[in-house]
Amino acid sequence: MYEMNKEELWGILEQEECLLADGFDDAVIGVSYGPDQVAIYDIGKVVEILSEDMPHEDAVEFFEYNIAGTYLGPKTPMFVFTHGK
Image (cartoon, rainbow, N blue to C red):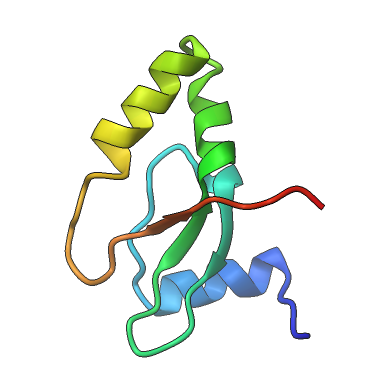
C-alpha cells in the first residue's frame, strides 16, 4: 500500500489546485485519485475542530449546513466518515 507524507500530500493539493476548507488543515486526510482530484477531510476531525468554539451538537449542525452542503465546482473538497483503528 502506498502512503504519502504530509509534504507530498500538500504538494499534490497545490499542484492540482484543490479547493481547501479554511481552518481545517488538521482534518485533511488525503486526496482523491482520478481525473478530478479533490482534498479529502475527516468529518469527525472537522467537527472536533468546530467543537473548540461551540457545543458539539452545534458543531455537527454547522458542519452539515455550512460546510458539507457547499458545492464550489469540481474541485470542491470531499468529506468522509472514518472508522477507528
